[in-house]
Image 1 (cartoon, helix red, strand yellow):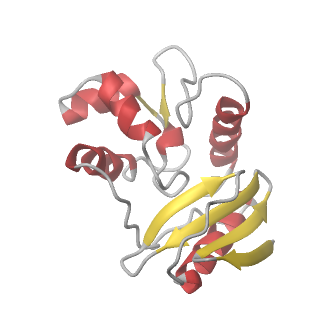
Image 2 (image 1 turned 90 degrees about the vertical axis):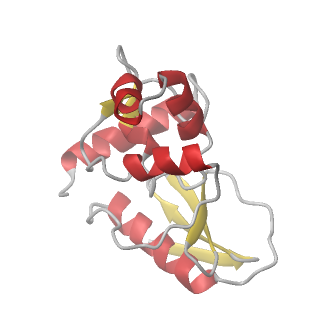
Image 3 (image 1 turned 135 degrees about the vertical axis):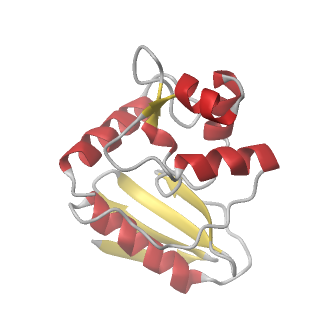
Length: 162
């Protein structure tokens, strides 16, 4: 695992999935970026961000799922409700957008929108929500590198201890 230099409140790590960047605030982890470096921010809360990067990198290299990291995503009340339920899906398991929508008494499209808006992917595991007849999208994309990344995450979780 290589922890990359801090970038104005963000910490980064090289992982088997590529670079992962984490931003933390006083209340907890606010954002995770996959692949692309983040834009600089002003606050310096890197110790928690570095700890989260290390936990994510260790998990992606065969360790346990990162637990007990404080999360502080910003979103609408509906998005926060969806994200709380996403955190209840255990590693190695999936729910369909429809199943999740029934639990929340909403529509699959609304669940997909909340998943797409998730600022903390991996730690709020939106990758565990799949389409009824296949993988579905990831980060708002249905083709290319992002759905491939989702498939790799799900395959990784099926092989890992929970």
